[in-house]
Length: 395
Image (cartoon, one colour):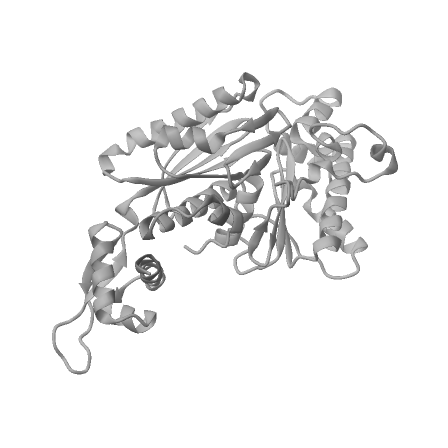
């Protein structure tokens, strides 16, 4: 009961910004002695602080001391393991970015090297932040592939990784000595949209993220739907024709082999003069402005394939919103929206994410923030009850 009361009071303090003990008692329904005792404990632990004085009540007397959540009372790590780069944020307890680090991802060297490189980036950012004297509370890692969010293991990651049964959470809990959550990167993009993007207040939506790979995240009733095999949203394996239905299954899937950014780049390089290291989307955008027919054909094919995926999601789950996240969507967005609108006989809201690459790290920060809330208010819950499996993030 003490932990429940602490969680309730901490949530009110965070929501209200500044609040007195008397107001906490009124809003929570707890007795004033209980509020006083629990607040004293939260202040002692450094997550709530007194800040200024409020107005005395109509009876006069001493002005009440006001309370505020102390976001600087600790720190969180949010990290993304990508196919090209590893990105890390250090945030305060509200999930606000304090510092960042980017490192090269080298999946061709194997899972152990990628995890070591990610840890090196985290240690670099923690090393710079030691002077802040902030305790690291928790971390959340965005990983590729099918992720068992209960155990924190990557069950399988095709694409360029070729991982199978990689114990990501175990590795980082040993390295960081704090509780860690691990979730699929596309799912965390959706969490980022829920808390900071277009999906705020939306209960049912889908997000499609296109990079080297392609994947979707499904949020139903305000919660991530992850599937019985942690494979919900693996739309890279969608098939759109009889010919592909009779082909052997591939590690990456038929759709990903068609529209993954590395495959699009290879297609452009085979027929057009694309210099190495140049942004594919920028180059194609310039080619389209020159009315290059080869570039137009590539974008038209991309729009067609993605439109089929969007349409299938729309008719299966009938979401309020479908968010498209990825640079290449900027070139094909109008065409995708047109094709979907032509096929689906009811309105489908399709939007392009304004968060871009930040969506993943914003989602990871939200998940780490929720885990920190659990830690502040009591012991971490069992794996079968983790916020990772339910993901209605409260704070």
